[in-house]
Length: 374
Image (cartoon, rainbow, N blue to C red; front, side, top):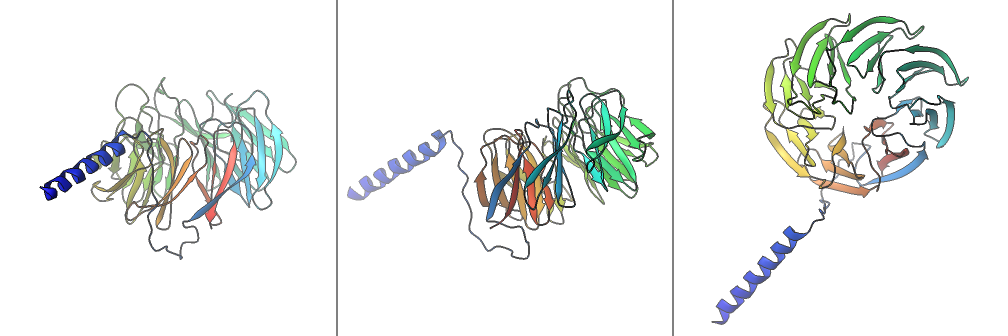
């Protein structure tokens, strides 16, 4: 009788504990303990430091690092330079009345940047003056790229322009048909390869384009009529990984764009890949590792119950992810174990940038953070 009573009491306690876990509305991440790979100079545990505040940058803006200095614009049209060594902030110029949400590009003494008024600027950041200005038809909200001495600029009407960096003349332009009127992000990125460039568009498609501006192929990976952007930068080499915010994550054959595998995993985050797998987040706050060859899930770890995960960075054996609500999580890339957690208590949607063994990110309010090993 006593034995039956003890078993009954244990059963009641177990049910109570299980019920408590499921009734809690707060999701709590726990760190795992394991050996650290010291060969990777950036590894957990990490320390995070706020190094500058450049004002409200919104949810699309990011920054560019060149020769130890970070360049970024804000919604007031102010463009800043931040010296990463001494953490000194300098205002380069103010483009009053023009919000800067595009990621700039810097080379030599020039800074190239676009605005929401469809203007594209060449700025001498040493002399702090505008050298050249041209106007496009639609706002410029994306990163400015450079390859082999040519600039590439994407405007919000899904048009890519190849631009001469000297006089900002248009070499060629590629338009991807009618842009989606429901597009709210316009953060598509270009992946450059030897045989062409790959870019996603607001209609949920990804195109391979030649360096003369000709379409080689297009693949549709988004579905539905609202918010179907393919705004994640394509990734990969012998297979091209693409995704959309309302549709699929797919692996495509680079020659003709045929589908090698596809998964119903919409994502707002960028994708990262190495020989071990493809890493991305889904709309439910999970970080997912997929097998490169067949798209099967190798592991999945939930890191957010509240908000999306917009940014991932693979450094060595570790995945760095930051939730929309500002929780920085470091995971072991092989097993998905949580190695470190830091709550930054701000809203984030900008991409990580790796520079000199440190990661940098910026909140929507304009706080710039550095992340390094302790």
